[in-house]
Length: 109
Image (cartoon, rainbow, N blue to C red; front, side, top):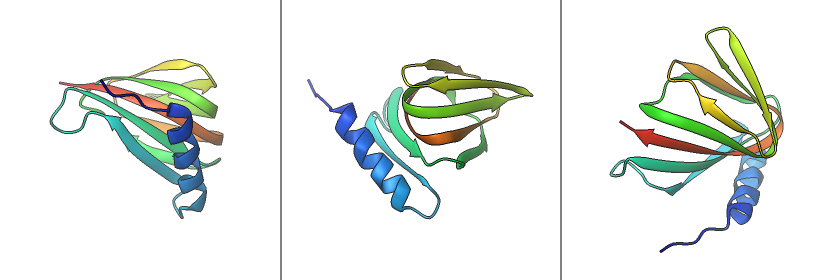
């Protein structure tokens, strides 16, 4: 069994995002290319985003802190601390409305 402090990982990723030119940082906590389940802690500073992309499986986005906007196909969903968003299978973007950390969970197909 492994145990992770998401609070500590979130703090570290937000610090790294604030120091990065791109305003983002990420760390895969569980999984990788050899596993079906992947959980990644991602941080984006306010105004920065992940450009349009699609994932190779089902996914959720758990907002750990801050506020984000998920957009796909003309629809948008906003999430804040504690909100769980189902990520559409289609191409989508994620924008930080304020400095934010979220846990992206993907079950790769």
